[in-house]
Length: 152
Image 1 (cartoon, rainbow, N blue to C red):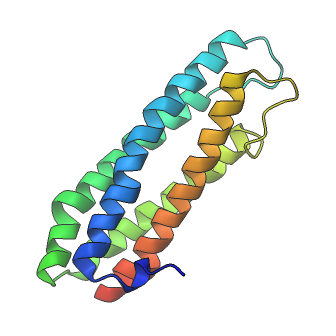
Image 2 (tube, rainbow, N blue to C red):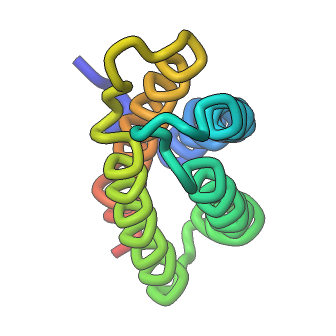
Image 3 (tube, one colour):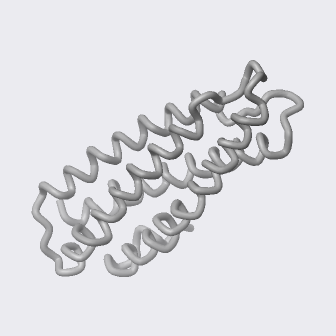
């Protein structure tokens, strides 16, 4: 049974930062590195994920800005117990953008399925992209449906 939704707000925020924010900061640079490698080494392969490294870089930049807004502004307001509705609505809109970005990630990776005979780097890249997708979806759901609901 997942007790995360029952954590008090400060503990939930600490969990979100440690389990998701910091993990994303580790996942994305590795995924970008692998995508650049796969795109370069397999540039002639008909199933090479052209544009994947650029999409991952865009996602990471966008996500990092979003997480900084949460860590520096929204979460401290929540810790004080007073959050106007505007910042939460803004974060939820940005979460909607993340879901669209994840849909593009799935499309670029053929639903995280490497082609038959793919090298280890390609398989590792798609496994990491699947992990990023799952983690980000959990992260968004926990913030939208648990944390943010406490202030609406």
